[in-house]
Image 1 (cartoon, helix red, strand yellow):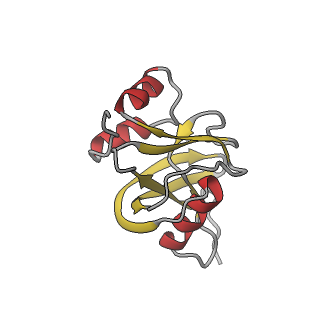
Image 2 (cartoon, rainbow, N blue to C red):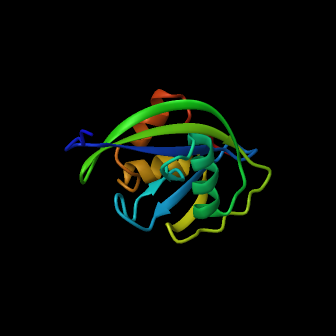
Image 3 (cartoon, rainbow, N blue to C red):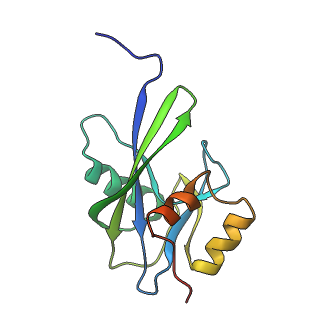
Amino acid sequence: MIVSENPVIRCVGALIFDPRGRLCLVKRANEPGRGKWSIPGGRVEQGETDHSAVRREVFEEIGLVVTVGDLVGRVERPAPRGTFEILDYSCRSNEWELSPGDDAADAMWADGATFATLDRNGALTAGLADALRAWDCLPRNE
């Protein structure tokens, strides 16, 4: 068996919008990106499907039960020992109360103006705003 010195670490993310078009963001409690705002998500565990991982991560991070939809986009980010391959999926929920868990220091529904302010102030994880712009997935203003 060959083990790569630079393994690809599969991760997933959830793009969840409320009925007003606001995007769910979490403030990361751990590295990478501690203290920065991002979308909910994390590593796919061995034997887990992407959809299962998205549902698990969203519930662990913010307490929402979601239905996972289509793949919206894919990005790669450097990892301490390899590369994070992150696949972001569109998700729906009938719940709107966010309850940050251990991996999230905070959570919010961000409208377009709030998201733009976070972006301008360097408070988002690296590349998030660019990816969402490219995928036409920015939150709307209320």
